[in-house]
Amino acid sequence: MSEVEFQTKLTELMGEISTLPAAEREKLEKLADETRERHERLRKTVNSLQESLDYLRLSIKYLVFDLEATRRENTYLRKMLEEASDA
Image (cartoon, rainbow, N blue to C red; front, side, top):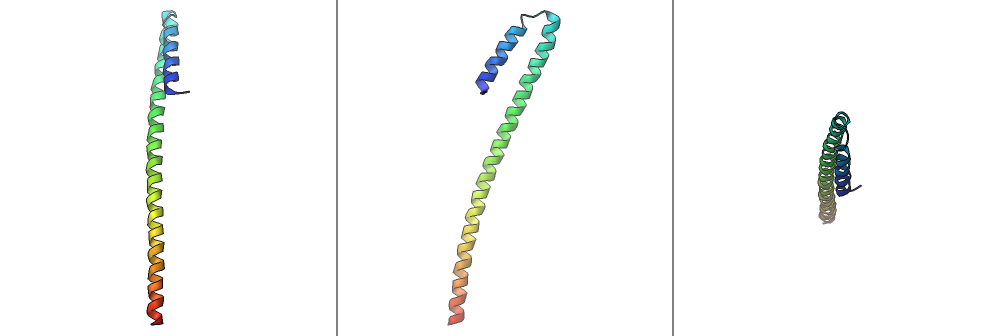
């Protein structure tokens, strides 16, 4: 369910709740508000996790780049050592 669909359904639910008697309405309005708050916290948590994953992916790319550069340097230095020992 998308964010728009959720908000639409919640608005529809709040509209239906408003037609109920006061005693029932208060309880259901409280539950609907709690649901809205939980949904907002969940959305923020998912966004935070997505940002963390994006940062992790970028960090891994940098680490792989660094590893490849280190391997190239290692190969180059080994070749230099071999040439120096042959001379």
